[in-house]
Image (cartoon, rainbow, N blue to C red; front, top):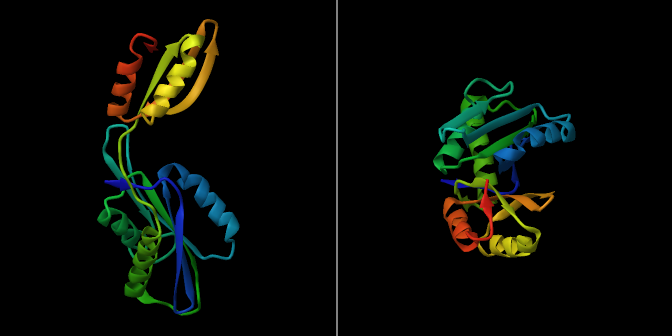
Length: 191
Protein backbone atom coordinates (compact mmCIF):
# COMPACT_ATOMS: atom_id res chain seq x y z
CA UNK A 1 0.00 0.00 0.00
CA UNK A 2 1.11 3.57 -0.67
CA UNK A 3 0.19 7.01 0.60
CA UNK A 4 1.21 10.66 0.17
CA UNK A 5 2.51 13.17 2.69
CA UNK A 6 1.65 16.37 0.81
CA UNK A 7 -0.88 17.73 -1.69
CA UNK A 8 -0.23 17.27 -5.39
CA UNK A 9 -2.41 18.67 -8.12
CA UNK A 10 -2.87 18.62 -11.87
CA UNK A 11 -5.40 20.05 -14.31
CA UNK A 12 -6.89 18.62 -17.48
CA UNK A 13 -9.27 20.22 -19.97
CA UNK A 14 -11.85 18.31 -22.02
CA UNK A 15 -14.28 20.16 -24.34
CA UNK A 16 -13.72 23.44 -22.45
CA UNK A 17 -14.50 21.82 -19.06
CA UNK A 18 -11.62 22.10 -16.59
CA UNK A 19 -10.93 19.37 -14.06
CA UNK A 20 -8.58 20.35 -11.22
CA UNK A 21 -7.59 17.23 -9.25
CA UNK A 22 -6.01 17.42 -5.79
CA UNK A 23 -4.45 14.31 -4.23
CA UNK A 24 -3.80 14.63 -0.49
CA UNK A 25 -3.24 12.87 2.82
CA UNK A 26 -6.54 11.95 4.45
CA UNK A 27 -5.74 14.20 7.42
CA UNK A 28 -6.09 17.27 5.14
CA UNK A 29 -9.32 16.22 3.39
CA UNK A 30 -11.95 18.21 5.33
CA UNK A 31 -9.96 21.45 5.52
CA UNK A 32 -8.95 21.19 1.87
CA UNK A 33 -12.57 20.64 0.75
CA UNK A 34 -13.61 23.81 2.59
CA UNK A 35 -10.64 25.74 1.18
CA UNK A 36 -11.36 24.60 -2.39
CA UNK A 37 -15.07 25.49 -2.13
CA UNK A 38 -14.07 28.97 -0.92
CA UNK A 39 -11.34 29.37 -3.56
CA UNK A 40 -13.50 28.17 -6.50
CA UNK A 41 -17.00 29.64 -5.95
CA UNK A 42 -17.85 29.38 -9.67
CA UNK A 43 -16.99 25.68 -9.94
CA UNK A 44 -20.02 23.44 -10.43
CA UNK A 45 -18.85 20.16 -8.87
CA UNK A 46 -16.47 19.05 -6.11
CA UNK A 47 -16.15 15.31 -6.64
CA UNK A 48 -14.28 13.36 -3.98
CA UNK A 49 -13.11 9.91 -3.01
CA UNK A 50 -10.94 8.50 -0.27
CA UNK A 51 -9.53 5.28 1.19
CA UNK A 52 -8.47 5.10 4.82
CA UNK A 53 -7.83 2.67 7.63
CA UNK A 54 -10.13 2.82 10.64
CA UNK A 55 -9.12 2.02 14.23
CA UNK A 56 -9.57 -1.72 13.51
CA UNK A 57 -7.23 -1.62 10.48
CA UNK A 58 -10.19 -2.07 8.11
CA UNK A 59 -10.21 -0.17 4.81
CA UNK A 60 -13.01 2.40 4.63
CA UNK A 61 -13.84 3.79 1.18
CA UNK A 62 -16.01 6.71 0.09
CA UNK A 63 -16.90 8.34 -3.21
CA UNK A 64 -19.18 11.30 -3.85
CA UNK A 65 -20.53 12.55 -7.18
CA UNK A 66 -21.57 16.05 -5.93
CA UNK A 67 -24.35 16.47 -8.47
CA UNK A 68 -22.79 14.65 -11.41
CA UNK A 69 -24.82 11.69 -12.73
CA UNK A 70 -24.61 8.77 -10.28
CA UNK A 71 -21.50 6.64 -10.68
CA UNK A 72 -19.86 8.83 -13.34
CA UNK A 73 -17.36 10.74 -11.20
CA UNK A 74 -16.83 9.57 -7.62
CA UNK A 75 -16.54 5.87 -8.49
CA UNK A 76 -13.96 6.36 -11.27
CA UNK A 77 -11.97 8.56 -8.88
CA UNK A 78 -12.14 5.89 -6.17
CA UNK A 79 -11.08 3.28 -8.74
CA UNK A 80 -7.85 5.22 -9.31
CA UNK A 81 -7.13 5.14 -5.56
CA UNK A 82 -7.89 1.40 -5.47
CA UNK A 83 -5.80 0.66 -8.55
CA UNK A 84 -2.73 2.31 -7.04
CA UNK A 85 -3.43 0.72 -3.63
CA UNK A 86 -3.59 4.07 -1.82
CA UNK A 87 -4.42 4.19 1.86
CA UNK A 88 -5.18 7.22 4.09
CA UNK A 89 -5.40 9.26 0.90
CA UNK A 90 -8.11 11.42 -0.70
CA UNK A 91 -8.75 13.06 -4.07
CA UNK A 92 -10.93 16.10 -4.67
CA UNK A 93 -11.63 17.08 -8.28
CA UNK A 94 -13.01 20.57 -8.93
CA UNK A 95 -14.94 20.88 -12.20
CA UNK A 96 -15.64 24.03 -14.15
CA UNK A 97 -18.33 23.32 -16.76
CA UNK A 98 -17.28 24.35 -20.26
CA UNK A 99 -20.70 24.36 -21.92
CA UNK A 100 -20.55 20.96 -23.62
CA UNK A 101 -22.04 17.90 -21.95
CA UNK A 102 -19.62 15.00 -21.89
CA UNK A 103 -22.13 12.18 -21.38
CA UNK A 104 -21.71 9.38 -18.84
CA UNK A 105 -18.77 7.71 -20.60
CA UNK A 106 -17.01 11.03 -21.13
CA UNK A 107 -17.42 11.95 -17.46
CA UNK A 108 -16.02 8.59 -16.31
CA UNK A 109 -12.97 9.04 -18.54
CA UNK A 110 -12.48 12.69 -17.57
CA UNK A 111 -12.59 12.12 -13.81
CA UNK A 112 -10.34 9.05 -14.02
CA UNK A 113 -7.88 10.96 -16.22
CA UNK A 114 -7.85 13.93 -13.82
CA UNK A 115 -7.23 11.65 -10.81
CA UNK A 116 -4.45 9.81 -12.65
CA UNK A 117 -2.85 13.14 -13.60
CA UNK A 118 -2.72 14.17 -9.91
CA UNK A 119 -1.27 10.76 -8.99
CA UNK A 120 1.40 11.13 -11.70
CA UNK A 121 2.60 14.40 -10.20
CA UNK A 122 2.69 13.06 -6.62
CA UNK A 123 5.56 11.70 -4.58
CA UNK A 124 4.30 8.32 -3.33
CA UNK A 125 5.42 6.90 0.02
CA UNK A 126 5.24 3.31 1.16
CA UNK A 127 2.52 3.13 3.84
CA UNK A 128 3.77 2.22 7.30
CA UNK A 129 1.50 1.97 10.30
CA UNK A 130 2.58 4.46 12.96
CA UNK A 131 2.17 4.08 16.71
CA UNK A 132 2.34 6.63 19.49
CA UNK A 133 3.90 6.19 22.91
CA UNK A 134 4.23 8.46 25.91
CA UNK A 135 7.59 8.30 27.65
CA UNK A 136 8.79 10.01 30.78
CA UNK A 137 12.34 11.10 31.51
CA UNK A 138 14.27 13.42 33.77
CA UNK A 139 15.45 16.82 32.54
CA UNK A 140 19.02 15.60 32.33
CA UNK A 141 18.05 12.84 29.87
CA UNK A 142 15.79 14.96 27.62
CA UNK A 143 18.48 15.96 25.11
CA UNK A 144 19.62 12.31 24.88
CA UNK A 145 15.99 11.28 24.27
CA UNK A 146 15.64 13.87 21.49
CA UNK A 147 18.92 12.74 19.90
CA UNK A 148 17.93 9.06 19.99
CA UNK A 149 14.48 9.87 18.55
CA UNK A 150 16.17 11.66 15.65
CA UNK A 151 18.56 8.72 15.12
CA UNK A 152 15.62 6.29 14.91
CA UNK A 153 13.53 8.65 12.65
CA UNK A 154 10.92 8.98 15.38
CA UNK A 155 8.74 12.07 15.46
CA UNK A 156 8.35 13.97 18.71
CA UNK A 157 4.74 15.11 18.72
CA UNK A 158 4.53 16.82 22.09
CA UNK A 159 6.60 17.61 25.20
CA UNK A 160 4.99 18.35 28.54
CA UNK A 161 7.23 19.50 31.34
CA UNK A 162 6.42 18.18 34.79
CA UNK A 163 7.97 18.69 38.23
CA UNK A 164 10.77 16.14 37.85
CA UNK A 165 11.22 15.96 34.07
CA UNK A 166 9.16 15.68 30.93
CA UNK A 167 6.49 13.49 29.36
CA UNK A 168 7.17 13.17 25.63
CA UNK A 169 4.74 11.85 23.02
CA UNK A 170 6.60 10.06 20.22
CA UNK A 171 5.44 8.46 16.97
CA UNK A 172 7.02 5.91 14.68
CA UNK A 173 6.77 2.42 13.25
CA UNK A 174 6.82 -0.49 15.67
CA UNK A 175 10.40 -1.32 14.62
CA UNK A 176 11.57 2.26 15.19
CA UNK A 177 9.90 2.42 18.59
CA UNK A 178 11.38 -0.94 19.64
CA UNK A 179 14.90 0.22 18.69
CA UNK A 180 14.33 3.51 20.54
CA UNK A 181 13.12 1.72 23.69
CA UNK A 182 16.14 -0.63 23.59
CA UNK A 183 18.56 2.28 23.30
CA UNK A 184 16.85 4.26 26.08
CA UNK A 185 15.65 1.39 28.32
CA UNK A 186 17.47 2.50 31.48
CA UNK A 187 16.76 6.22 31.05
CA UNK A 188 13.02 6.40 30.33
CA UNK A 189 9.71 5.15 31.65
CA UNK A 190 7.08 4.02 29.15
CA UNK A 191 3.66 5.30 30.19
